[in-house]
Length: 360
Image 1 (cartoon, rainbow, N blue to C red):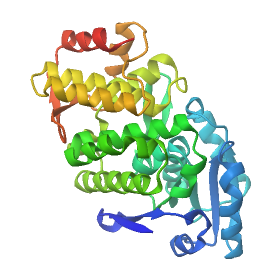
Image 2 (cartoon, one colour; image 1 turned 90 degrees about the vertical axis):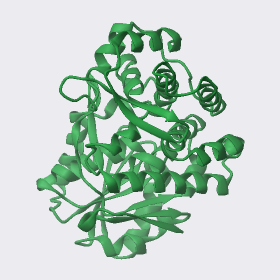
Image 3 (tube, helix red, strand yellow; image 1 turned 45 degrees about the horizontal axis):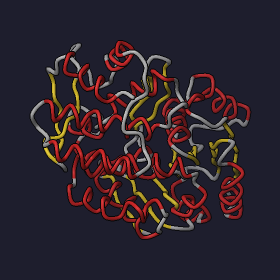
Image 4 (cartoon, rainbow, N blue to C red; image 1 turned 180 degrees about the vertical axis):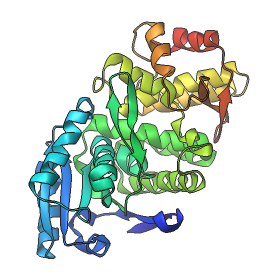
C-alpha cells in the first residue's frame, strides 16, 4: 500500500492506494466517531463489493446501514440524493455516523454532498471503485449533484476523512469505464507533468491491458498531482481551476446531449482536444503538440470530436461554467505540454471556430 497526504491543515487526510483495501477494516475503524457507518453504493457496485466490505466492518463490531442507489449519471439529482437522507432518517443515523462512498464518481459526489448537509455536516470516507474516481473525483472534496442546465452546479467543498483506492476493483471495471478514467489521467499530465504525459504515450497499451504496475503508477502520480494542487487552492479560487482542462467543453457536451449518454471521461476526452485546439488558436500551443494530444486520446479509445448538436447550445451551456467570473468566461488552456493557465477574453468567434472544427 502507498499512502499520500492531502495537506489542508486540520482537514488533512490520507489517500491509501493498494490492493485488498476493501477487506481491511483496520484502515476505517480508527477514523470513526462511532461504531456505525452508512455505506452508500449503487446497483452495479453493491453485488461486487458491498458484501466483502460489510463483512469486514461487521467482524470488527461496526454496524452497517446499506444505502443502494440507482446507477448512472442521470440519477445524480435531488430526488436520488433524498434516497440517502431517507435511509439515514429511517435508520436513526446521527451526525457522528460516518458515510462511506463505495462506487464511482457519481456515488462519491452524492455521498459527499449528503455528508456535507446531513445534520449540517457528518464525516465521510471515499472508497472509489472506478479509475476515474480513484485518480480524480474522490480527491479534493468537491461534492455535487447536477442541474439539467449544468454539470455539478449544486454542491459544496467538503473533505473526506480518507480516500481508500483499492486497485483490485479495477479488475471488474467495464472496458468503457476504464477508458473514461484514462481521460483524467491524461489531463493530469497535460496540465502539470510533461514527463508523465510521455510516460502515458509509452505505456498506453499497458494501461488498456490493465497491467497492475502501470495502473498503480497512473493512480499514484495522478493523486500526487491533484493533491498538490488542492493543497494550494482548496476552494478553486485560482490554480485549482487548472484541473478543469477540457471540462468547459466537456461539461457542455454532457449537459447538451443528456447526462449518461456519454460518460464523463468520454466528454472530457473530446473536450481536451477542443481545449488544445483553442490553445493553438491563441498562439500558445504548437500544432505538433495538439496532434500528440489528439493521438493519445484516440489511442485511449476516447472520442476526439464532440457530438453534433447546435453551436448555440454548446455556447449556452459553456456560459454556465463555474469558472465564469463577473460574467466573463475563463478557459483552461495549455502553454505547452505540462503547463496550463487560465485565459480570459476569448472571443466567441474563436470558440465557435473550435466547435466548427471539432464537432463530429
